[in-house]
Length: 302
Image (cartoon, rainbow, N blue to C red; front, side, top):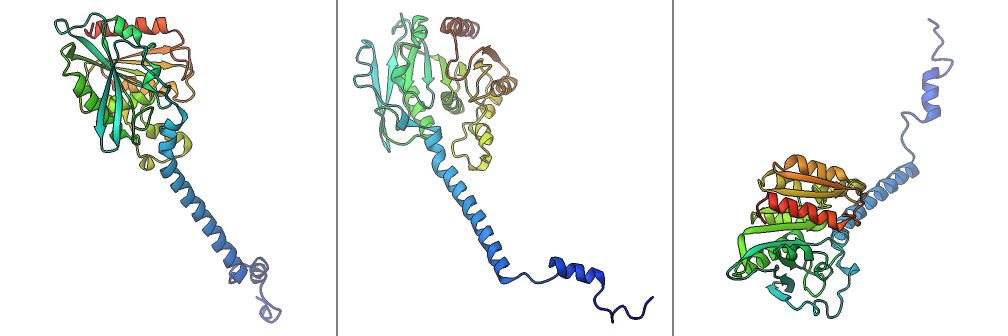
């Protein structure tokens, strides 16, 4: 070993550490830059959390995007407008009797819950085949939609659907043992939430999801931040009634995997797939109503 290592100056390793700043104390401006970066990241994270919490109901319930038509329902001679009072104001519902039903001959009833950018007044013509089968039609509106007051949420919608159902089941022309829940898209979540409280005789889910949390995950929203979960998968796992699942193979909003997962969870589920996307499902309504009628016959509703 050479005895003059220290005399000749620092060892090469020490010089390299000094050259790259390793082991040296950060300069004051470097500390400021790090603090600014950490502050910016924290601010962005906080903004994202507040945006998710504050905007999710505007996205899930875009009632502002659909306008009610003046005089809606005036052309329906047998329409019975129902109103319930809530802590946020009055909420509207429509009742339309099925063909041939009466006090002496009560018939089934279907509670239909529409999608998140729709109104009850858009559906009587589309759902006329139910009435032609002798099935009465209940169309409850969501809070904040159409002429209804308040703000929509999972709990508010479920509470209101239950009250509307209780009201119409008092009618002598309605058979309370033959109640069908039919939900489209978001409406599938609404009727599944109701099914946890009031067991239907049959369930029709059209283009719906396993849960809102599963849909939100595609946009990197963690499950714990979802306020209105509409957990349809959990509902079907504990509901032993006939279920008809209808979905589009090309659905880009709610992929068909959601329907397949729901099918695997429901012991009495039937899955019917159409060559369609989300908003054009079903592509052929004649075929759809043939499938629905066959399902209701097999379920002994008709």
